[in-house]
Image (cartoon, rainbow, N blue to C red; front, top):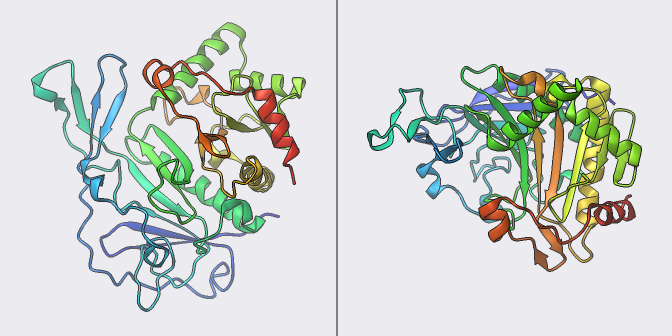
Length: 371
């Protein structure tokens, strides 16, 4: 079921890039083109973000004060991700679309390049512009849809869009890590309800990725093998936490799952990122990902749409790339139909997680709610 996709690149009124990923006629064949222009009068985006290094942890912290006034939970009639109409101009000028990707109007990253300096002239606190790029991925023009309900052809188009943008952003100067993700639910902190994802192109390797890479490098030095490959093989051998398995992908609840609902979806082949997937792997990913998101929505009785984060862990660009391996971490902070998992003292201050369930119970429930 390989989907043919045409990319059309245009620009919004303030100069931001917009890319349509079309899988339907008359656009996919080129019989028609997206000639609609953004009719809004927008000022240029002024991203003045900076990053500062925490001397206690070595981590870079991003400061993006311009995001304080970003759009927050607008009514459906004012949604900026819906197609434009005769009376409403949105971030997507076309009257309809398949999948659309555009530069975020309120980006966390994307400050102009500049020189590094010190906060208060103290060597302990280096800072520099938060270069990079933030993009929004609108999965569908349907405001009330969810990813699990998309046709397989459209889910595959989203996969292709994420892969294409991963490749393009990885080639930008200064980018060290490309992170594709979806936040869903007000409990997660979303500011737009329309089904969408995001892509961050970081100018540094984030802390979680650094930890994964360090552990992978240590494991290879000790055993000569890939850590994530060994974890996947061990989960498949045990079978007790496997919830989905196909020819190219397997989904499982990790043996040390932190969240009350957590699934890792990993390819059977060692690949660094989404861009490296071949057509059969992308086809099956669309099936597996849609299936697992549907199970998340059925996991808690009486909950129609569980809040979740879908995070695509990819290999970094440049140094340590050989230590990275693609996988998706899908998790929810809901622990019961009417309760959330709060990261309190132990988790937030010490990073020491305490779970209210077991991975085996999570896996058993996910198998119960399989379609």
